[in-house]
Image 1 (cartoon, rainbow, N blue to C red):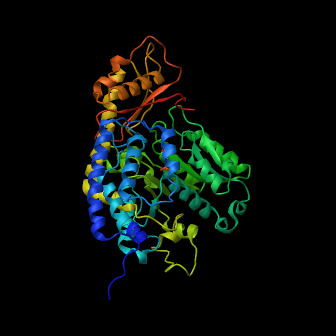
Image 2: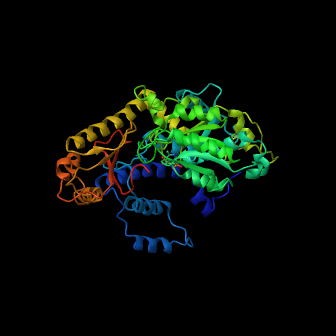
Image 3: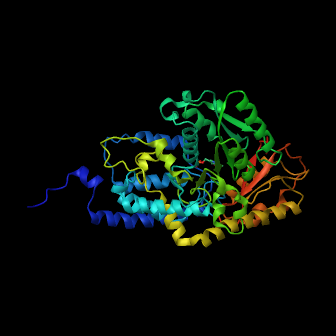
Length: 483
Ligand SMILES: Cc1ncc(COP(=O)(O)O)c(C=O)c1O
């Protein structure tokens, strides 16, 4: 029997393999050209937003358009309308230029499009993710029986930690929510922590007041005495402390809270101990710097973001826990429209997400291609670059304000310098005027001197999560470094 003619919409949405292959070849060349063009252009967006909105508004999808024309329009828009993370002079602290294997992983995952919420639908993909979780838990120093899963990012991983902590604190939390507690449930983080904690508490219905922002010790670390005292006072007042979340690599300054002391206090009060190593967790790869994270192995759970220092494409977080069984207690649900309900392997009964993308492949291919030693070299080079740059600035009279091995330095300029904001503005202006300006010239500390006084308490933040760059990243901050 002859196969029926394809309808026009079928050709658009599900074209034959010849068209797919031809388009794929054209696309890979088109993208390579676009990324090369990005490297010769501006780091910051140059898009004429008003014109762009007009063009966008005209697209009401009444008429179908050729796919290749749409692709050209979109890539052109992205070339002008983004901070370009692939640009050689982009020095993003958190959002890295993506590793090539992770870009490949996204292409592969998109082609097969596995639904990995249940093991039985995608055993190969789920097993790969499980393997990655085991490998990371091992590197984090957690017991062999540990488990976890990939998340959309650090916020979801931290959210998962709070759900686990609340569930362990009282199993009635599952049915009653915050009402299961006789007093206000409380989680303890430092003032320098990533404030997604507030959104998490809000979403979970325990309220933003559930987040106790503990003072820091003057060096940006959670003050252990204040932590101890606050928990004692709260508990005596009838509240319900449920979790301490230490940050290993604060967002502002790459500072690590005292992990052992936090673990001791959590153990003493029998509450959950979480380590948010969203950014700094990549140091697990480095034998030289692994001890910066010493104490992480005592955590009940850990957050690491692959899309930060592991440099995978966006939307790749990791949640690890030594209490694997708790995930099912927290996220169990039974329904007969799912093909299975296996607590030991099905992600939809062990995590916040239901339908899931195969994001673990990004780290699998990246680690596979570079090895742990490759990632060790990647993070160590970042640290070395920032140290070298800091050294030069210190010789010019700048003061280093933070103590971190996480490839970030916060520096205040000497008296008589331009203000930090002016320095950064000047660098950005020069970059856009001379897109090819050489690294060293742009950032020569000797050229940063000026007669005006710096704005009080402003500091320059210099970071380098991108080991293939030659210059650190600049950002001004008008906020005080430590509150
Ligand atoms: C320490 C820390 N935790 C959590 C997050 C949130 O991670 P994400 O943006 O992946 O949700 C960040 C983001 O910068 C962070 O620095």
